Length: 263
Image 1 (spheres, rainbow, N blue to C red):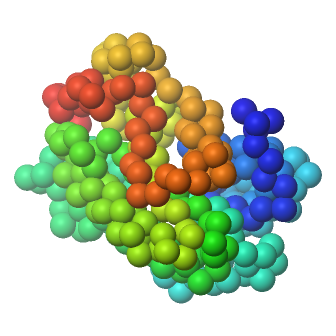
Image 2 (spheres, helix red, strand yellow; image 1 turned 180 degrees about the vertical axis):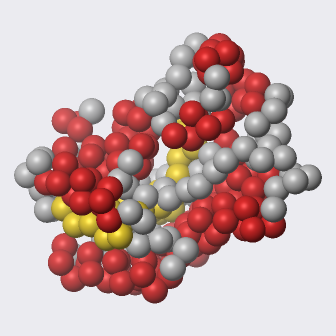
């Protein structure tokens, strides 16, 4: 897929980019020739990610910071621009989640997911804005089906991701005149990710989820990174404010499988 796109000379920043879907996205841009900076909380994971990205012969930077800390995020983005140039692509994908019933979830637990997912997304976009290439930059938020599909034991994630979708649309409205496109990708059930292992922790539930996808399978991290490569490219230059499901059609009805059962 990377052979179809050339990001040589481009700068990409990925918040949450040291594992799972977000690292796969960072790796795809690196394979396509971009300089890539990643940010996440754990210094050891940041170092590992930077080392792996550097194996593609590109310049890789890493920052250990929490997306809930605006000053730390702002510093990382300022440093990225100083060292790599204006930002061509920003991916905001840091997230937290766990199943918990609404009637016993603590306010602190609810706030933690909203702070990471929603406030963290805003912090990344707000801090990135002064450093984005104008015109020409592409911002991609990583949302979730919970933004539009109510799921039991997911009140916190549903609220947070619905907010992420609206932040995406508002920023697309406000930043479009400067030539900045803001969109979101909504991954469906993606194999071998921490999120799905938490939401479908048993073989029986994991199988039910796969069966509920119209295409009959789990997606892969490559499915998501391929969409990101395309969405950030000139081939998608007239797409702005879109919330794009990459889920095999799961959000058309199959996602209801996770509205049943106990956490």
